[in-house]
Length: 338
Image (cartoon, rainbow, N blue to C red; front, top):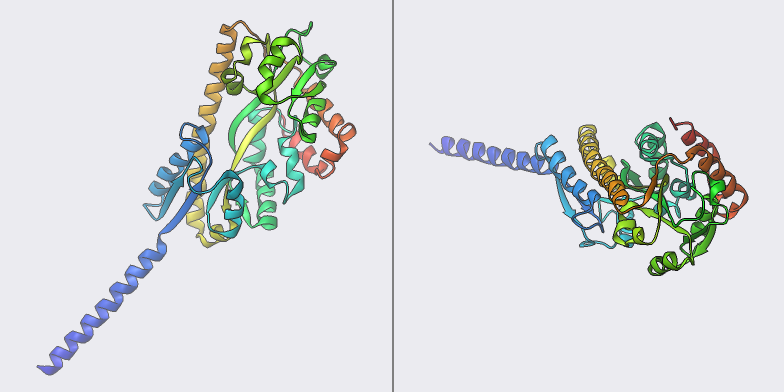
């Protein structure tokens, strides 16, 4: 009888140990990803975070869990990069401008006509060239961009300057509003205009009085700031293509299995398509809105001429800005124009 009791106790202990080990193994297999953004709930790239959460949890069968914090609830936009590098945050949106202090050539990805529009941008950054850039960022910074989501494109918005603007030569003498910083002044020159620094809250009055002839912004900003009330033209130059890069802590990324990484990338692609579509649809609707408000929309500016002039301008008129750029990479990006 005593032997039976002892044997039963041993079996019970073994089962307890096995159950505990299985429980530990199960817990170890569950991955938690924390994603922070300063974006507000209605932003397309904030909605994309929710799409990612749902999709990756579905693909992984709940093995990957995502905690979403938007509107700066967890970190400020300025603090996100530091948090990522320290590993106290897993994912955040960054871009070339935010990372240029660490990888200087990335500043060219936010310059005039590095990209000639949405299709060019996404073909480059979500293709082989993007993989090379993102790998370089990971090696140099300890954080890894995983994709490029579309934010919107800056377009020219002008008063009647006595001519229809379709080339950079047409911009000669045009008083073109820019923020008062070297990179923005370089942008104004790269478009062929006469850069005129002015605070954003003075732009409406400046356009109304003729102190400036034009400005550039994504179309939603033009609508929200009511610039259409004091201008005559929207020129669809697509001269700066805004992007944000979902970026993960490199140590966290390497801790994932190949299968988990594949789930993350697949879910991000679903989220990217949702984000891009929302922004593209909104822009298309705004073009019709501006037409309805009486503006002339120029859909066929000579982008090739603008791009050629922009390169010359950055190299010759703004060499301090373009000094850290990788011109071989720039040429590879330009070769992707179709």
